[in-house]
Image 1 (cartoon, rainbow, N blue to C red):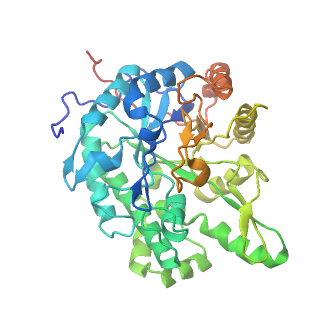
Image 2 (cartoon, rainbow, N blue to C red):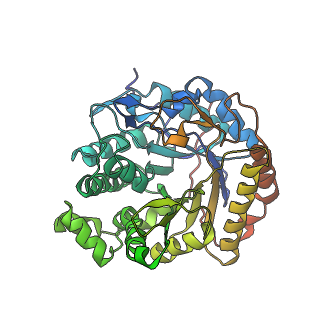
Image 3 (tube, one colour):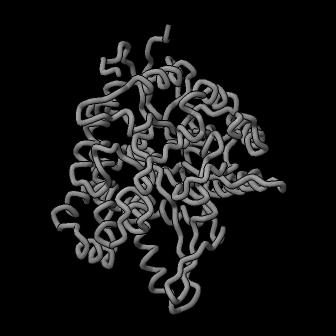
Amino acid sequence: MSDEAPVSPGRSPFWGTAVPSFMFATGIENSNPMVDGRRVDQLAASDHLNRWREDFSLTREIGCEFLRYGPPLHTTWLADGRFDWSFADETFAALRHLRIHPIADLCHFGVPDWIGDFQNPDFPRLFGRYARAFAERFPWVQLYTPVNEMYVCALFSGRYGWWNEAGTTDQTFVTAIKHLVGANRTAMRAILAVRQDAIFIQSESAEQYHAASPAAWAEARMRNAERFLTLDLNYGHPVEAPMYEYLMDNGLTREEYAAFRSTDLKRHCVLGTDYYVTNEHLIHDDGRVVAAGDVYGYATIIEQYHARYGLPLMHTETNLQDGEQGEAAAWLWKQWANLMLLWEQRVPVLGFTWYSLTDQVDWDTALRENNGRVNPVGLYDLDRRIRPVGTEYHRLIAQWRDVLPTRSLVLQLPLAPVEPMS
């Protein structure tokens, strides 16, 4: 176990160079929720814990200079004020040496055993202290996703009964939202106390609910308001009246809501949005919710989010299972076409991510079943052989990396020089 301070503080691994204006990224899937008392660790399932050096080399090989990545929270954060940085020290030093910008993914669907779950009211305060300790340990890291997909995590943990606290009530759902967003905001402030130019790229699922009949219209409207709850609270945006009543009826106080209305953090943020073929839903008049497929598509849905928050955007997750017909490669180009449509409409899109670098395991059951089933969604398979979609992504990056940065809409990330690593 290592609790020593870092030896060479700095701010950016890119001495004397600017960050590319457009961020081509991938990620290392690091979900770690508790399911029926069992820790589901995707870093272990993909064998990244043993093959991380190879994975980082593949990130460079594919052409990505940005990587959504974080240490396993449940084995790094041992107690309040106690940490084992040994794995993080090695991996983040390697990223710095390879000149890969980490988008530090600090909490991805799970917490350490000693925290319990997302119903713990101490979680936001304690997580802020963890985030500050991370920022002090790695002061050269600038880009962060403190808490990943807060809406999805609250749904799966607090309403559907699948993960962590296995809650199934509106009260547990609202409590999970309150604590997840509270932790995210507390972490942002803690990181900014260490690094004033930190940038937070929120990775949140972009959802859309469709009504199958007039009888389902009211429920679809309610769900389409609910999908914004975590981001509304995160960015200090006023929630819609029915959502305010819903929050008040299920555990959020007026004082807590007033605290969430503060907008002092928004100027440090990029709205990262995740879109999969499963993100659009069809609501039947009997209340059943089923997958609708790719109906509106990414660009149409994301225009709603951009209009609401007015922030620069990044496409922070997408993938599709590969098949004999090249479905994944076709999906990649479809997502890219949607992004280009936004770009042509002068919506400030700063980056694109195929998630993740390697195949994942048991996501076909949302990690609820321990089947060991490989989901072929990566740029590489679990033997680290490139998939057709990996070849296409490499080609896409090579074709577009020197084209998009010529536009003036993009954000220039301020990175100060540091001494090269020895």
